[in-house]
Image (cartoon, rainbow, N blue to C red; front, top):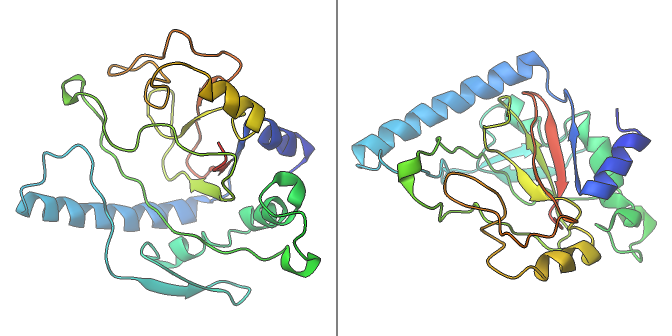
Length: 233
């Protein structure tokens, strides 16, 4: 699956969609457990009078500890079931991460890193993103919908899609190629508030002077796919 074509796509774009990394059984469990927690949060928001908010965190203060197949121990807030814990070392994504994070050619490991340390990496944090659909009357999005990232970042992110994301479904977006300093500079050279005015929606308009050498991609993916991207974007 992780072939030279996908490597080239990731190197050029800064992201790639890895298809079918989760099977139907995994998706069913992940979605079932997720829905249970969302229902719990919805009930809590109603009791607290927060049910009119457009976005909210499903963060829970309780932490859970798990150990992967290599004996590494992780602590996080979203290890709700075995299916969630298994995302840490997914059999398709783990070898890809070992290559991307361990080979300095990808820019996520210093060139001087000793060879014996290159296969090692850590989980920085776990997230579950939930965001209800927006209405034209909601006004500008003042949350985390703006562009962020920098070529100085060392992280990579795996986004496991539990539902299919189509053309009008929101989800992940990025400015292609800006993990490379030359393209990042093209972005910085754009006059205006490009961090928020990078795409055309019901609430925003792309700046008229947007540099077409750094196009914006809305990334579509099927349920079970994984969007791998560098946070250098």
